[in-house]
Structure formats: structure tokens, C-alpha cells
Length: 68
Figure 1 (cartoon, rainbow, N blue to C red):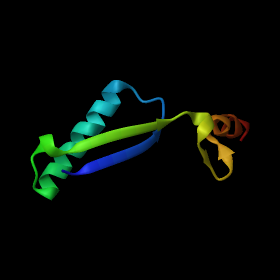
Figure 2: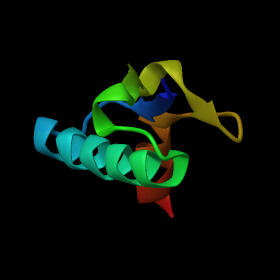
Figure 3: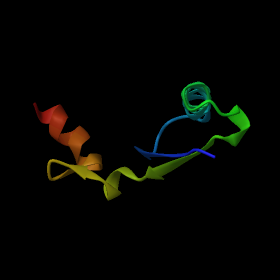
């Protein structure tokens, strides 16, 4: 049974997550030659203040980009 974990910043709608899960399930089933109901996907969301890139917390990146 394939297991896929997606790490993302919180804020996507349920419809966006559902569409992503459906696309990944379809692709995994096709390329791994397994039934779609054996594909397990988990989305792990982090608050913007708990994740950083380039030393800048994501909740502050929006502020920094507005200054440019």
C-alpha cells in the first residue's frame, strides 16, 4: 500500500485538498499499478508562524514582500 505525505502551510480549502488527493491517487495507482483504494495520502499542515524559508518565517514573508 503506497503512503504519501504532503507537507504544506495551512490555508488551502477542502476542495483544493480533495482535488490534489484525487490527482495524486490517480497517478500513483497508474504508475505503481495498484488499486486506488490502496493509496493512502496524508496532508500535514503547519501554521505560517511555524515554518520558515531563507530565515524568514512565512507569516512575516508576506510583510517583507509588501515592502518591496
